[in-house]
Image 1 (cartoon, one colour):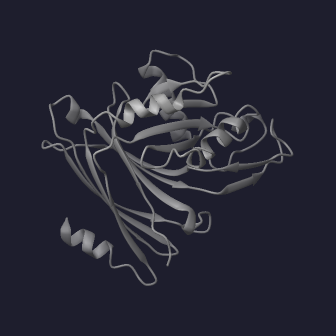
Image 2 (cartoon, rainbow, N blue to C red):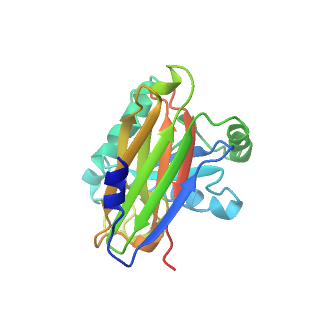
Length: 254
């Protein structure tokens, strides 16, 4: 594995290398299921985009926006949608014993989160998660050029057998996206998005010792803006949906 990682990180210049490691605070994951074809989704997108400005940084919560594809048949093909994200939302619903899905939908550490019309308890819910002990250790190494992002992820999950059934996911996500919508329920609107998942790797299973080492190459191509690319790694229990720990990293060009 060391030799493979070394070979993959021998990327052509110019390239930027960075590392990140999880700490003693448990970081939450906020999943948003959304679509550009849904006229009730933009307010949820805007609320998620505003979280960093409200001091909810990546040391506390990592938002991930999954654009679903089941709205595409109604007149507008969401360029960020993937059938895999729709399937992921359905699996979450099935786990909770719910036979249908809705958009927009927010899941905080695998649990349905709904903001009230007259109150917002997000800060208190998040504080409770942050104050609980993390149950996984995550390390990320990135090497980014203009055309390629190479990631090496090392995850360790101590504890009993039930905890070691947890799964590892790697999400490549992009900030600062803008779309002029030409059809569908949002026709004529210019929509702005952040934390948009462009690629999801996983689930990756832990080995008998509760560890995962995994290397990926992401082709940034023409459709991604390298300066706005981030990588998130999170460890999630498949039955409860609970997030054991999460970490995000990005490489900035000097």
